[in-house]
Image 1 (cartoon, rainbow, N blue to C red):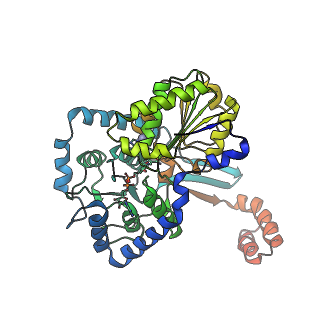
Image 2 (tube, protein in one colour):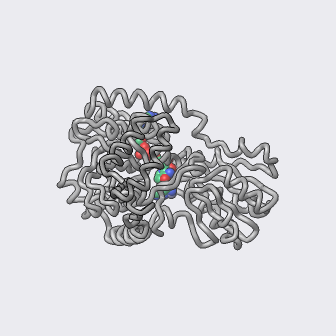
Image 3 (cartoon, rainbow, N blue to C red):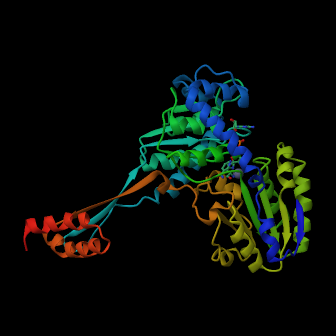
Length: 429
Ligand SMILES: NC(=O)c1ccc[n+]([C@@H]2O[C@H](COP(=O)([O-])OP(=O)(O)OC[C@H]3O[C@@H](n4cnc5c(N)ncnc54)[C@H](O)[C@@H]3O)[C@@H](O)[C@H]2O)c1
Ligand SMILES: N[C@H](CO)Cc1c[nH]c[nH+]1
Ligand SMILES: [Zn+2]
């Protein structure tokens, strides 16, 4: 990790830059070319990229019913039980987010109401480039089901032998999702955007992914398909004061660094001893990890920063707007009250970010790259549109009509005013 001691606030913006931001133009160009290709060649383009990027020779792009049914046999009972427990917690947290229909009279005879209606056709992207993230399927599939989305299309990259990881298929079957497409990366997002012979076009695309997936979702949004949010390479920022346990903090930093070479982890401390101890511990634990090469690449772009106070650390973090924020301090509750920008916050010494990644119940599909300044993570709301309705009685029109007429005339919009006047004339006073 790169070490910085007491940088001045003027130096903070440079330290808050994400590594991925530097190559955005190149990635976007590549993604545009993939979109064009998928639009022109449909399934043939998907097969081409499956071979080129995933090393898979595919004839069928859609996972068959037999493949879905066979998956459970390949998933150990303990893992099945863990997935069921995680699903239950995610269901509890997201189920509690349900909103009842809101109905009221704004003035006598003017009734307004708002009803949540599920997005009809949703596309879920489940990353699978370097790790099959079946946990992401729980994070997207559970709220999609709770919201009542009738059509769910799942895309995930195939493995080299042309199959899809059985745990992803087991989880899909558990959630009753049977449209599973073997396509990853930008090409999957392009297919969900415009449709192909095998992939239905959807109304909204959900899910995290690497820089290609994230750039592709931005392009999908420009082409009229909604997206959940930009959820790119994973990030964590840890605020660790003198009370922090360096062994725990190092493990938390590595847990996000191991996601991908472009993951970013940031450590802030007001204790030089804690910074030294954590960075030494990171090196020690790194050597034990199967994905140490990936994590080591991420760590090269990651930062350990010594700051003067808890207030400075929080200020830095709010400006950086991390996807995940860990408050490794005895005073976590007090600090949490002043968090203004973060995807999800983990308080105290016994709340690893991995808990939220898998099973505590909160969603792990979260805004990265500073988007936590303005976006929330995925929730039940993400799968729902809130449609407003209204009905006006004769008494309501008599009361409201003149207000509308006056405002419409003042805006110079005579037809608007007449739409009211004609009705008022028809009902008389
Ligand atoms: N923000 C979140 O909520 C969140 C949650 C989970 C995971 N993540 C992130 O998701 C990412 C998963 O990445 P991944 O790579 O393992 O899987 P992925 O499924 O996102 O990407 C794999 C696909 O990328 C494409 N690809 C690979 N190299 C390419 C190239 N050179 N040009 C064009 N396309 C290429 C291929 O089509 C491949 O199928 C990680 O960065 C992880 O940090 C984020
Ligand atoms: N940390 C990831 C979100 O950035 C989510 C995840 C899935 N599996 C493990 N972690
Ligand atoms: Zn994770």
